[in-house]
Amino acid sequence: GFKPIIVHGGGKEISKWVGLLGKEPVFVEGLRVTDAETMEVAEMVLNKVNKNLVQMMEQIGVKAVGICGKDGSTLHVTKKLANGQDIGFVGNIDKVDTSLIDTLIEQGFVPVIAPIGIDDAYQSYNINADDAACAIATAVGAEKLAFLTDIEGVCMDPKDKSTLISELTLSKADELIQDGFIGGGMLPKIKNCIDAVKEGV
Image 1: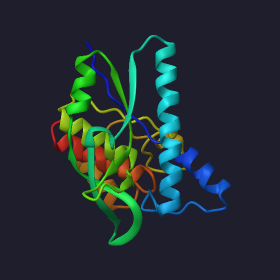
Image 2: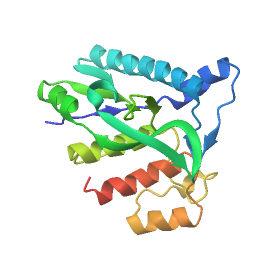
Image 3: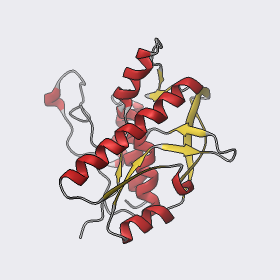
Image 4: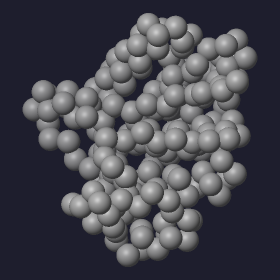
């Protein structure tokens, strides 16, 4: 009875390929600074990751279809700024068109979505995968939103895994952000969790 939607990133893989071009990956507030060349790499890598995920799912008998936010104008964006700073082709989702997602789910497919969107001028933008997952979950009225990450989670002391916090209220999450306990790549994740819960997910 579950109707899952998978939204994926590809950060480490993008960094690897950007490094192979002799560029140093740069992040501001956990978001990748994305110039035109990095955008091209990101799009290629994310599409590769997307099709690999589809292949793995098909191998275990799951009917999956890989799309990106450009398909069917699913993810429409405007330029995202990090603390007022221009970080290049990084998109802030202002509209999710769920038509294609709905069609795939109705036909029994699991949509696997790469976080690339387009703006009014049909320019491609890299989107933080957590932002994309949050926006899509809200747009489809998802019952649950689960984030997968390669770290333990939110810890009072990031260097000590035993300080893991397994449950957070909205107010406690806000408090931890204000007090500087949550930073780096975990910051957009927690902000998205807060936004999603406020939107009824």
